[in-house]
Amino acid sequence: MGHYRIVVSGDGRMVLPDGLRQHLHLEEGGLLLVREDDGRLVLESVDDAVSRAQALVRRYAPATRDVTDSFLAERRADGARE
Image 1 (tube, rainbow, N blue to C red):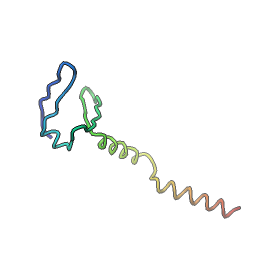
Image 2: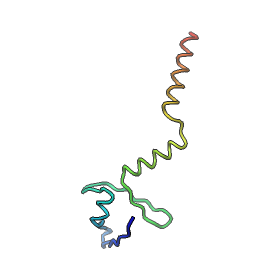
Image 3: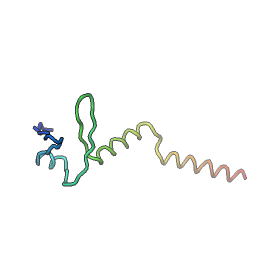
Image 4: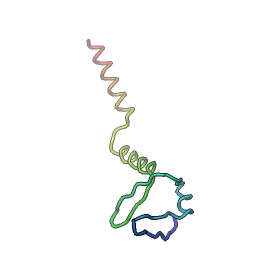
């Protein structure tokens, strides 16, 4: 992780230095999300934001396979009773 000096133009545009874009694998037309975090700006790729969200969901939600297996077992039991 390096430090970069980025100038904000009058219309709010910023240019990310080439070395930073290469390090983050950002290509022309790439999409970044910006969020404010305790007075700091955090830029992240959409892929990184999705991965972060998925990891958060995995911490609090049961695994899909477990839910599906449980549902199918209940359906089979219902069918056996009928």
